[in-house]
Image (tube, rainbow over all chains, first blue to last red):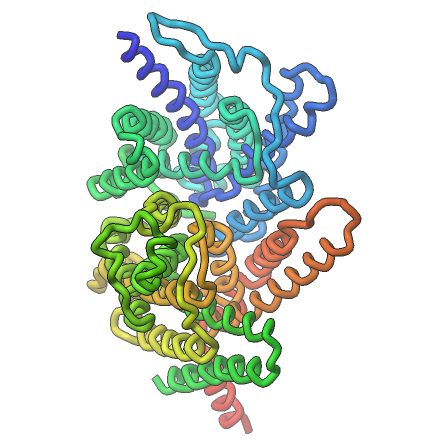
Length: 296
Length: 342
């Protein structure tokens, strides 16, 4: 019983974080059909903001808000620097600019801060554990679950009920048509980047809460997770991203528990092989998105 | 077809010029840089055979280079050194020792076979999904290299490869690869693939089996990457899996993209240009580090400048320096224009 609870909590907390990461990526992809390679660096930005603010003596929650705000700011910057100038050109051009922008941010952190890990301030609650039905669980896992439920609900509400969300979904389905009907293209794209930055910021704090330090390369793992989750779930569907995130967490956690120590080193290789198998069966991903419209 | 011969001739001339020129200068450092450049030409032109013809971005190329380097290492490290260099190697492999040339071909074949198996399902994907899975593939290859201690000595540095790559060998391989890339580009597969790059739906409607075409190009690219990896391994003689990861991927993609991914000329031109820029910036970085007064090491400056250059090229000239036509084609057209003009 304790094992089951442990397993479920592990899957849900990991899956919640994965789902949020994937969601942040798919929001951009859905509208622009462009992959944002600099997405992981938004998490890095949130981490370094926390590190830089740690000397200021501000309450932790203010620092966290600041970190999320910086992630949003850099999300919008990504749009202006890497996407807007090349948006109308080839898909490859945009992939490359976002890859270059990601490298730029990473190396800027390397140059101006340090290649070595930096400590990030965390409230005491992140390192406490509680016992639920015999299973000892870190409180941060429960925080992650709660945060992901709240955020997933908020994003669902935003996308379904608000004008902005409906305009975004319209733009994702058929960008040209949405523009014709008076949806302001640049505003929608910038808001999508802002929302993506917001999700990255929150995930960043939760993610760094697990590790406690931030390094320039910290964005790689979340980026990969988001990539794989979106590919499994279906590149253009928001529910698909969430399903993909939880499924990937299930695969990862199961492998964690079942693989022997020797094979555990190869976990990523196993995970990705499974992904390839899923793609063999369903090249479109598990959930199909809206009919593809023309890219801007 | 005629302009392809001219292109091949010109590119081989450029490669020969680099090789002979650096020999004439006789400075060891330049010799090193030039050999490195020629090996980069092999890798970047290899990447071009897939990326340029199919129009899909591939991140896994460096992973296949790593496979090649390790294959060649396992096959060529002298038997008496194997105990030290690869302590966990399987017993039956410890006696194997072949000539570097055979090992280089084997390296290419291993990379090609692995590519053939893993990429078969992936070639059905297009656009972003293809890019993402190629990125994932790079991570898988890196994870395997980093952890399969028996063959790769794990994350530790593997040493003891015989140093057999010198300037002439690198130049010859580079020239052969350029010719192969041009031949492939003009072959039936290459032409169909380029048609699918321009318009997937139209090409498929004309009966092109796009996944199969891409698959062939991917295998060829992986073969060249494997050969390039072996070449590099025998030049550098000791390396760790870290050498086959994101930084290097970024570098070869920068080279290809700045030069122009659609042409072999672009691949060669981009490699030369970025190599010079890179070495220049590295030198500047070193000079800054030497003069800074305990202000800490300057790291990452080179990458920042390259990233900015890449974004600038994408904005101003998204096709790169040679976006569509090979150099031979451009020259012949220019002459024809002059002839027809009064």
